[in-house]
Image (cartoon, rainbow, N blue to C red):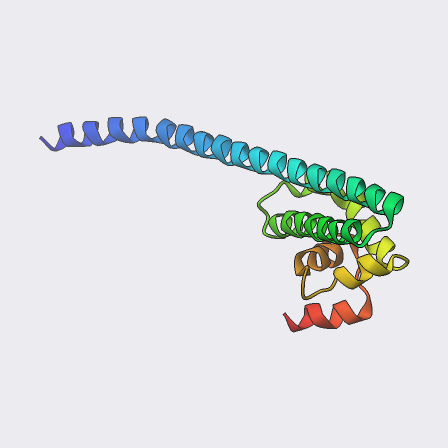
Length: 155
């Protein structure tokens, strides 16, 4: 009786080991699929925000009306929110960091560079409103001015 139980335990153990590996592989594939889906959503979100910002900026520059200026400001907020959300997902490691950096590091660096000369962007891009962009800029790109540095250290 003990030998039969031992044989059954060994057989179950031998079956369980490959099933565990199969389960781990399926979980890894599902995680990679979710990561890929999120990356596609991030790309679409940022692309749409960039396209809208460009359109609104051109409309404003052509008309110089208050209505077009407000639409431009609104699209700038949406643009920064899209990048803030994307940086938040990257900071939380929900995206593949290497691919994210290849896709967006230059654009994020450009956002920081543009704030130096673009007063409207500078007025919008504050640490309080878009902390994830600042955190990503500091952590992965080494970009943060002294004011934001002190704000990041408080968090």
